[in-house]
Length: 494
Image (cartoon, rainbow, N blue to C red; front, side):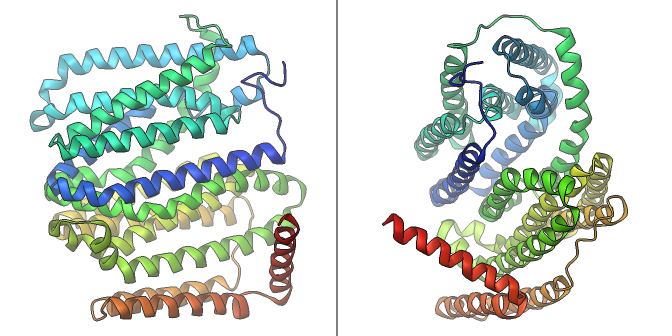
């Protein structure tokens, strides 16, 4: 294969670095896009309208891996290992045509039986449009991302999201409500997907056919991963249905706003996906002792960083809502911001804890932990949401994610023999639990200047405590030398 072929790549530091930076930049842009547009959307849309859009969104998200049979996520390793352009073309055509046939069949079934969904029947076409748009764009992105063409993907996604954002704001302002949001996504997801297909098929022949042997090989990898996606969806999104049923679409709309704001925490996950798993796999095989030391420091530091973010979300929740959300009807939802931020923080720690189990090939343990989390979430949703509304939903999500993280930690000890807990972790947890409670109680009695002052004091104390008390002398020396080295490089570059 020629090195300049679109679907060729070399695994080196430059490739990994470019992909990591592109992913982080894209995720930051995606999260910030939602926050920037939130004042406009919440000013134009009532909570019930955002609640309907949230139902459409979470329904399309759970249907996507089912419609694609997880072929866009579960078989990436087979594509990455293949170098022959003709074989890659046959593989991609098999995936593309299989997904297209399944989508067409399900569309006909929805058309025939969709009228039996009662009050939710009018939303089914909008779910279908959003699902079709997401699948259409996901397929070429999956292929290009597998072969590390992050520059092409990032440029396409940036332009697509900019177009969707501008069109969404216009259509919502004109009164098209959630329908305008779905239409904007459908039109521009499809248009920018076609641009990627054109790029791909300029150097690849399209054939309408399915290689049965390849499909069987793909399904052996993709189907077993579906339960993980399903249980993850239960924890992250099933509470939307419970809230809509027990509290109404207005309550769901408030809940979705908090989800959008607190999801900024998840940007860390995408950096870990690029850096942490390759490092884990290599060190697990080559130097288990060194990996244990690295993991202890990284896990403890990440836990401290995330819990500090949770405390800041708790203290500033009301101010954040006043800043980014215009309608008064949304404001009382600020009470759950700290809980949702905690849930997302546990999701980041789950990413860390999953790596050793994957490296040790304990995939069933990962599935078991997610299964427990899904069961805990479902039971708590039934027990808490009818009585406590969005507070109950936030609590059930936070507890479920905590259960998964704890389960993964226990599995690391028992199955992988990986004793990763640093003695300093208990002090980190104790300090931040007390800080979280204290800042939550102080929030209602402070005005804005007082909150800003407490923010500065808290961040300063955490940074000083981490550097002087949390780090050992050799770790402090390493950080100081690294900072000096970076400063020297910057000076030389200037």
